[in-house]
Length: 193
Image (cartoon, rainbow, N blue to C red; front, top):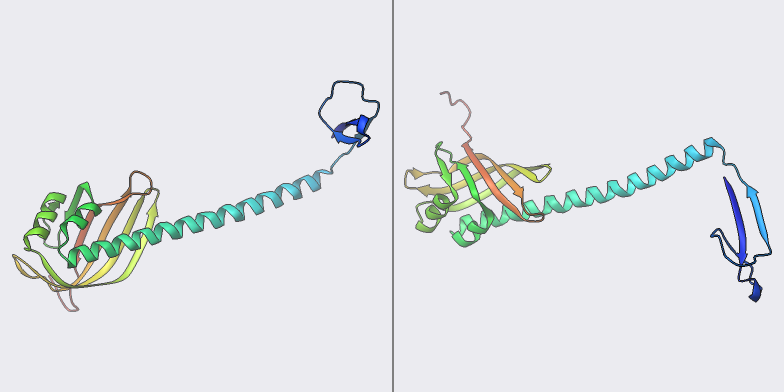
């Protein structure tokens, strides 16, 4: 590398160096050449990449933790809305194109899910969630859990253990909505179809 330093502000006697070409009569000019060995350049580049990667990795982990916390919070909001028959809260959680596959295999839209909640046809008295796992795929979050439920529907008692999958999509950024849900009853040991 080759640098040419010229001194500025010579009238005041400060003799401050500058690499910027200055107009006027600079009476002092130094030129020096400094060569950095290739091995040092590589070490500095690797050190810089490592520090930058560590900082970015920490930021990405923090963002992932924050997103996971958001989904956990939404899962609890869904649970509370279901237990309290709160159709307004449930409406805010479900996307307009929401589609569910119920445990008996029927399809259910957002409007149908909200109508069932408002009418009291589906009445859940207890809902305990366990084994929750959250995975992210870009702006999609996939939640799987086990739910132990006590409740009734027009078809009868639905109490039991279920495994479910719920899919959230982030649109616009920072706003998660449930787009899909599927529940399957966990059959006891020794049950053969």
